[in-house]
Image (cartoon, rainbow, N blue to C red; front, side, top):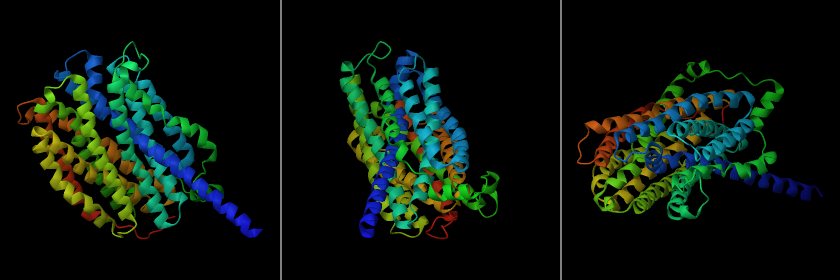
Length: 447
């Protein structure tokens, strides 16, 4: 009898584990889905909303606004979200953040002007920034066994790149079959349908929410009255100062490489000689195809990192496996095939995506191991939001403003050179900073 009961309990625990994994995977997938749709839709959206050709200077200016201002808003509110995660619990903040980014993504599809598109993108970014921090802290604390924790966090984060593939496919379908979809603001623009599809993660979340548990370690400390109040000042005490500074700098570099270089590729592709001669729908399909190579590369990189995370003890050595090749590949890809050869660009950006996107998963595994329970969400949010969102994403602003000073016969060629400069600088700074990255003192999460 006791054995049967134990078996039933074990079965329920395993089922709950799968529910948790599914929700986390959906959250991470649609984090990337709603963020990575911007490089795909920003050019056609601005052409429609501003009523100017794609080579008009105002397009480049608004691209920089749409990349950076939402990231800045997300960084500010995401920082607050990390604090609230430590104060009110991981599950509650996680659920509301997913609902926010899902419904604001849907609303952005109805944007009547570029200003409204910017507003809704800010709301979307806020939800994503908060969701990432809450999800990583929640997942890490639900699995006390170190190897299972590393695997669960690593593999569920890999769905972030699956989200990139999903949005690439979604955009392709919208471009190809959009004329058969219902009218949105009187038209069949593919970019509107793509934005609206971001509502999908809210549907399973509403159904599954009652089954989600709170973090046991956070809940027990809160119930016992032993949970310390989080504080941003704590992050700069001697015990955490080096960790806070180095992780903030390095996450800024990871985001800078992504926003300053990789996410500029959809605007570079139409400038290639073999793409310029194509009609607009074919150009957009080609952009989507190139983006899919980058997303497949990113997915492979995340999976490889998740596999290596439980086998390589040194976090610094694990990171260097991706940093060093990326430092060589990124400038080569943006200086040569990005200005001359579509086929080589596809494979090259796939490799750059492999090396760069894997580093995002690295931080999801690393950060929970260097902050205690009462400070975990706050510490993660500072590195991810101040470093990644507020500083790192500013690289997109730098790249778009650097274009005018770059060599090249066309605007896309100049953009490719600017992306090479910014992305390489990000890799160099990140690699140098890695030598000061503290190694976690133990495999178990600090209490």
